Length: 408
Image (cartoon, rainbow, N blue to C red):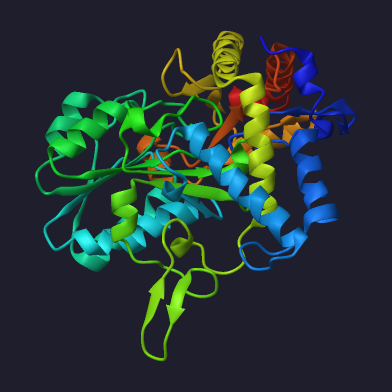
């Protein structure tokens, strides 16, 4: 397990909520930030604050070096071939929308197919839904097994020669399912389709190698991997990005502007119009440094141990329904306590200092598939401990006692 010294690097965890030590189990929504990241952003604003790619003065040069340095770090972190394949965005949502808005219309026509699953986050659902409407393409869904997993046999049947885009999360933000992206990519490519991967929940927790996965596009968010909010990235294979048109126009993405025609900068800057999220990129670079110092393999091992321990302890709570596969590969456990509304459960847990997510988790089609309106979700990260799991179980037992009249 990761040492307590790691936990001490997160100042927000050193507080009490409603008289109890904070137990933060909502990292799938957003992760907490270590001092290293906080100090990097603070230092940028105190010493290097300037716009990038513009001024030749010292501050502008330092800001540009930090911004492009973060791109280089991210390129190495996910093993892209080139920094030209790394587009900074506001996050996963923006990255996926760029693909749907720019690449999608250039390849889709009436009768073509887009393949997704019912468990996708709305960010990886609505863009394809709208793209299908606008192009006349058909939206198809990979069948889900009872535990939320998919089979490659079903994928072979669903992905056809008419399929042009397969879009799927590497890791589900609700079910904790880890999908076989490399194998799905091979199936997509055999049928002439591209695969778009929602990496929001995988990048913070697994060692990601986009070349090994052979995905065509990969989207991620910084705030789920210790970085500030408002920064993320789109990885795309260079040939695909070069053929795509920008979706935002303005300063810094142009090469030459005439009265009636304009040309764009080369990759990656043609997709980064306007002043970029400089401080966010600086923070993302510091977050990547922190994650690599700890080690992604070590983080994954730690989370798998926590997930196994959580499944064991939560099984001791009667009337608790846990959704998703057993022996999950990431620290996401979604559940319901009898017929008690998850918001009520989360409110009692918060009174005990335990922070979990309650709601539909931006996955309403999945909630309908599960035949529930919403669920509660506990999600773990490198700063969580088995004591946090114990606190969750104790808080759930209190909730069970409090709502005993509803549980019979």
